Length: 312
Image (cartoon, rainbow, N blue to C red; front, side, top):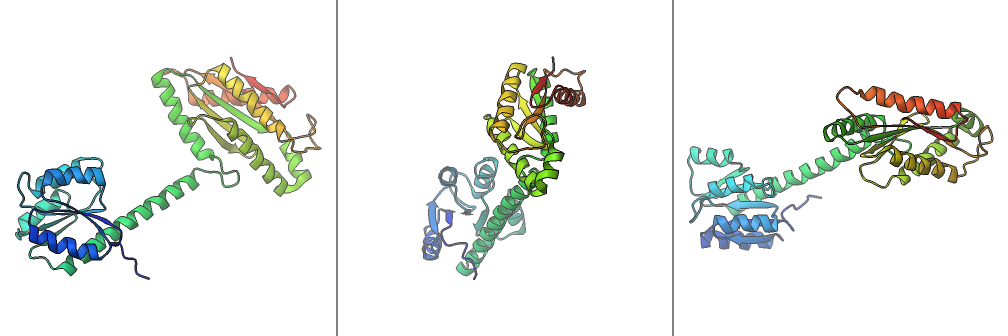
């Protein structure tokens, strides 16, 4: 079924010629479009900013400011720059048309107009807008998928690495502390061997969700770091804050009470966790920051697991 893009669209007509206005507005209204009318460029720009029409039909020869200047101003306003502008003018020279396109117009229709031609061009440009919006939504979904772990639905290693680099540089510029937690599910291989891969997957999903639910700030990021390891990035967080979050993360996993009969630490699933925290300086290396968290995780395991170790 063919989509009628004009129906329900908001169309702004800027033209000082009453005959043109009557013809255009009467016909467009019959298609189901909402038609806004302004008779000069200044009020047309104000209307475009306020009403955000889907498309603008713009005459060139008008009092006050002409259509070229009107289009230029529309394209320099962030809120209206993406709205398609179709010029409708009695100026038929190629140089006039080229000027319209150079200023950002998407089409140029010469007078006297053929209403079916105008409608077809409006329909085409509204369709293009619709396709662009669909493409943008699809690209956003694909980007989200590329940055998410397929199993746990939290951030993946790619997003973790990118975000950590970004926040490391920001912390260095602003002389703010940044904390990194690296956690590992205790005795996960025996868990997988005992409860099967499906059981292991379910465990990973529940632990990931528990970790993410501890984080309250939009700037904090929980990610699947690899296998049964998780990373947590805490921008603008001192060691005391990182310790508090670590305590909450460890307890949140314990509270899941996921049975683990092969654990020598507890009868349920637990995690070990390492904390690294620093105010980055020019001579500091990000890899050393990560390695510190890894070393603390190793110490937590050495000391019996089901705990966290912080760096000083």
